[in-house]
Image (tube, rainbow, N blue to C red; front, side, top):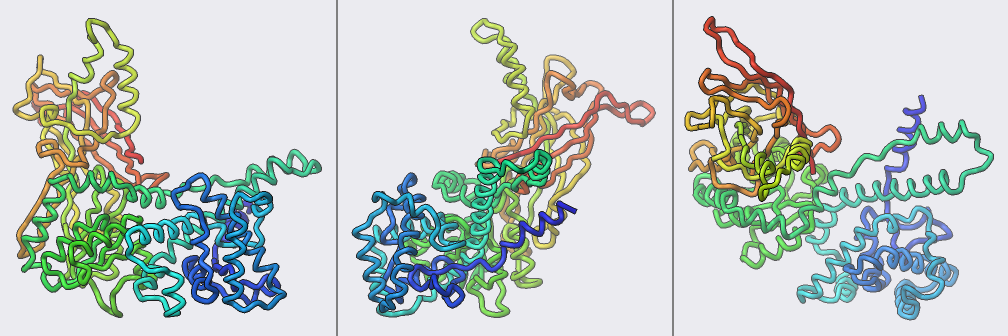
Length: 575
């Protein structure tokens, strides 16, 4: 049918993505031209064989307004120059020299640049990866500012080789580049299609054909992975995590107090290493090798931090998605070599927000030493408890002697739209805290991360109210983490309302306090029971969808359940 055909067409262009260098590409005989698996290798080939460094001619990577268009113009100017010189059989180094001179005399924003918005080379992969070009340019600028690198052109021309560190880094980026290439091609194609369909439609096309065409268009899926990894490029998120002393101190104690029993002489994999703090703890604990993996550009700073603290001989920083690095042999592990410990701070709001744990588990199943290897931490638990925030709700009844009840209704509408992340004080908790699920992280399966479990919530003994009835305005979700590998010093921390707040705070699901809000009669022994369900988001797998089927009541004199209220509570925690 039509949908099946469309699926085939969408997938046809995703394979065999290759890059062509500026100087080595033959416009007369494209099939004879060299191809490169990554953008970085194509650019580097021009440097080593032609003395031409495209990055050196680009505007600053921080010029957000000018970089994108300027790069398009520059790449096409270079392509056109090489194309015009093709019949002259110019020596390789001479070609590079002439191209350098041409660009110095024809800078971006010259009159006539508009003609260079049209690609000179068909399906030019460089034009589809401008974000990667900007990233490489930014890296060069940082290295230059730090005085940590020599002139790249002279260095490569002298050695005509690529150092092993660069090769490993490029290999680790292959999948990321390919994924962005696919997205860029799809985006550019969609622009062309939209332009053709909406602005330059053939007048002879019938109305029925136009309707059919629009009907068969598919809505693009959001790129949730790129958003997720890019969010960890921001300094603020790392400062927040490091300043969370409950979190960071627990990891530090768990690692350093188990130096002899767990880490000394071992190989450790740190997934989502961020600034590298956990990797450095492992190095201080005596690990012989630590592999620090992250897929955001914070890894550049992590590498500097490792060197600054004198552990570059132990810790190796590798950028990429862990699944891809394993598949492409992008980790510094020899054939058959495994890791003894996988350390990771993968927890998100409500424990599973961001859905990082499946990636850590994929590494566990692929390269962790069987039997003796361990995840660290190795146990996680999710809890729920009931809260009452009457003070917050009643505030609008008397604001400086004014009744602002409409604001209460507005606030309730906002609170009941989605789950929220906030600190809930123990003074607002009215029920016991009950565990709904526990995962043995060394053995659990991916499918077990989506779960449902029964629960019972009973009023706390210390709860007081104006009458016998206590309203439950919220279900509060929190988690505990255990570092409890056998024969080691056990360390744990909690994100519950009874503990010192962490940057995870608590995840709150509000009932509607103005309509069908659960209430428990303390005098008659009422309690709430039901089923709690948590699973990955239907639209974005990094979100969390939660649902609670609940009822309140009591045990009657004859031992039967006497229900007083019931309902269904559905909330999502979204980015």
